[in-house]
Every structure is written in structure tokens, then in C-alpha cells.
Image (cartoon, rainbow, N blue to C red; front, side):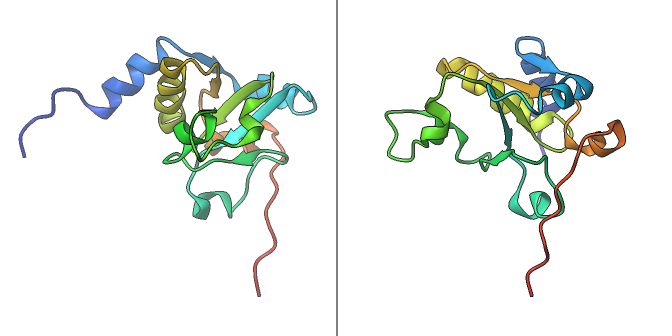
Length: 132
């Protein structure tokens, strides 16, 4: 395989240099803030193993369409005057997502480390009941 022009790690580094990153403890402190919307972009299988209570799920492949009021896929939850904090498992996917949203003119931040250390930092986790 030929070498890529830019690696995914380089893309994440570039995104992180220009977006707002929120530390886990700071997001935990924001959980009860009605002006903060936490957006989980992980795969549905990841989310089903546990997620931040009150977070909304927006699959990474649809985020750009869901935030765009001119898109037929627009979701009203993204039309509010609130602070949006996106997260994935490790902070890589959410960094790229937030950089893209910023390019679109949608203001957002992301959880720097991601969900992988959320519970260890004292963050609450909701685990949905298993389906029979």
C-alpha cells in the first residue's frame, strides 16, 4: 500500500489544535447544566454497553446532515442556542467531527479523552437493559 498524504493521527492533531477540548472533570461538572447538550457519536453497539445519562446519540456518519437546517435530515435538537459537546470513545472521532462542524459554522466542543475513561473519572454511566 502506498503511503497516505496525511495520516489519521495527523488529522486528529490538526483538528485538536483548532477546536475546543473539554476535560472529563469539567464535563462531569456540566452534566446538570440545561444549556449543555452532550452528543455521543459512537457506534450504536458501543453506546449500548453504556453511555452518559442524558446524552443524545448522533451517528458520526449523519452528524453533518443532522446539524444542517437546510438538510432534509436536520434534527431540531441541534437548532437550539446551547453548548454542544461531542464525544466518542477516545476523542479521535469527535475531534474530527467537531473540526468539520466548525468548518460548517456550527459551534461545538468535544470531550478530549472520550468516554473510555469517563467512569474511572467518576462520571455516571447509564447501561440500557438487555433486550430479551
